[in-house]
Length: 207
Image (tube, rainbow, N blue to C red):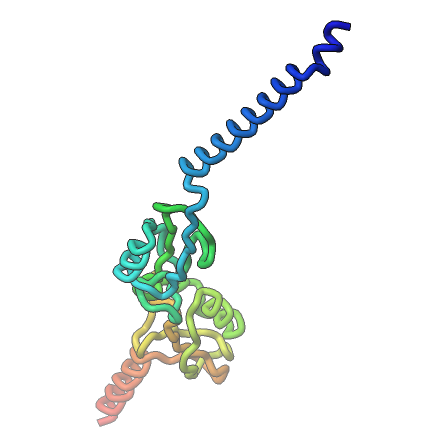
């Protein structure tokens, strides 16, 4: 009965109220301290850095007390200036804290070079064209030479020069195809020269 009376006594109720008040005040002060120490109220909107070069990026981020780090270079994109920002993390419009790093991916200086496969000779045009396009090349001029195989690839050329096995060209380069016309044996320059020499010798023998 003594404990029951004490619980409902005025003294106990006053102490209970005081304890609750102290607990609330301590909780409030703790939350205020956490907010202050972790800068919860400080939110900076990430700007859109697309197509900016590094000088402009640095100036823009310095104004906002943000930092940056370059991740890597992506595949060349002709729609973006060279060495400009092509991607960023966090994305534009996101909110971050002071001194947060923005991770950047830059557009390289140009298309990378790709090795031309050396197993395309004597394959058909229908086989070679998709292979070259899949590697990023464009198909240029199509010409024909006498050969027993119709539409067989006899030569690959770039700007008039013969492409040798292992040659590397910039992506999107136009590769010209020299195909067989199906009319007969392929005759190259050496064969034609040899034939002329044989005909000349025959004419000399007749005299």
